[in-house]
Image 1: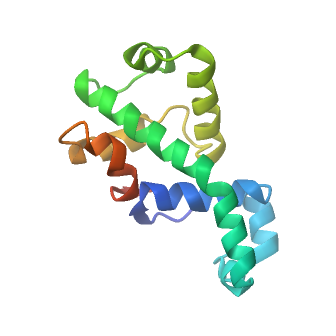
Image 2: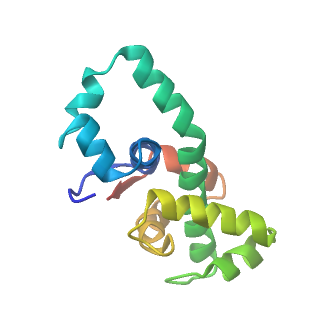
Length: 141
């Protein structure tokens, strides 16, 4: 992803999940061109099927980033490791690493969600925000 665009975290995750689903950025460019106009040219049902297929993973990744941000904010930290994240939420190791693998598939330029989480942190005010923020908080990617 070379261009920087500000949009909701969930929108970025859905777009990235669509790209991952077709085999990566190069495959997406071959299939749809550089500006994704080809996606718009696809039939309405085909777009809906593709978006519906990738939305669960995109939602999990967006939620993972927001939860990462909440843990960093609550612990007053600038960065976190997957082990610290796992301990903070008392989640099992396999689940944490599966979430991290999904994150890295959609955001391969990042080892951890730290950079995105730092963009999300200022928007978190209450614990309730951690469950809805991924749909509205803007990030630059």
